[in-house]
Image (tube, rainbow, N blue to C red):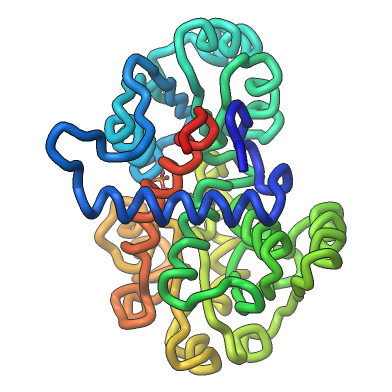
Length: 336
Ligand code: CP
Ligand code: NVA
C-alpha cells in the first residue's frame, strides 16, 4: 500500500483497504509512541527532518490543531498555524493563490474551513498533499480516530452497529455514514426525518454498502435505533459557523434524541459512547451557561451521566485523533 502524495479530503475517495491500512499504521505509530524513542533513534521508522506543514484553521480547534502539531513534532517536522484571523486567506487572497504559495514552502497543508468545495479547491491548486481538518460536510480525520477507538474497545469493525443520534445532516453524521458504508458496518441515523442525511449522499453510500455488505438505516425511533447497538454517538446540535438563532428550534427538535441512560438501556451491555468533542454535557462552558439561562437545560446532546459514565470512551477517542492524524501525514508524505 502506497499513499505517498495523496490528498485526504473525504473517505469516499479511499478504498476500504486503504482506510484499514491507515488504521493499522495509526495503531503501529501509537504503540511506537507509547514505547518511546530508543537512545539515538527516532520515535518512528520514518521521520521527515527539514519538512514543514501548514495548518490552516478558518474555524476554531483544540484537538485537530494539537494533533497535527504533535504529529509533526513527533515526525521531526516543523508546523505553522494559520488561524481564523491574521493571514491573508479569504479576505485578500483566494484559495487557489494560497495553495500555490504554500506549496512552494510546505510539504503538506491541513485545511479546516466551511464548504467542502474550498478544501477540494485548495487540493486542486496545491502541489503537496492537502488534509481535510473539518468542513461543513465531512470530518474524515475524526472518523479514523473513531474507528480506531471502536477497534480497540470492540474488535473487528465489520458488522458493528453504530447509532448516530441528533443532527444527522452535518459533517459528523455524514462522515459516519460514509465510513460505515466503506467498512461494512451498520449505520443508523436516529433523528427527526428533517435531520436525516441528504438523499444524494445516502444514494452514494448505499451503492458503497452494496459492495461491502454494510447496512444503512434511518429512523425516528430511539428504541428501534439503539436496540443491540455496539456504539452510540452524537455531536453538538449547532455546529461551528451556524447562526445562534437556530438554537431554539434545534433544542425543540433534538431534545428527544439526547444520548442518555434511556437510549443505552436498549444497547448491548458493553456498548460504547463516542463524541468528537467539544460536548455540552454540563453548564461548565460559556455557551452551556447561556443555554441554561435561556432554555433551562443543564445538558444537551449527551447527559452528564453518560458522558462521565462507564460506556464513555471519549478521551480515548480524543487521544486517537493524534495517532490517526499522524498516520495520515506519515503515509501521504511517504512514510512506511
Ligand atoms: N473533534 C474536533 O475536531 O475537535 P476540535 O474542534 O477541537 O479540533
Ligand atoms: N459538527 C461539529 C463538529 C466539531 C468537531 C462542528 O462542525 O462544529
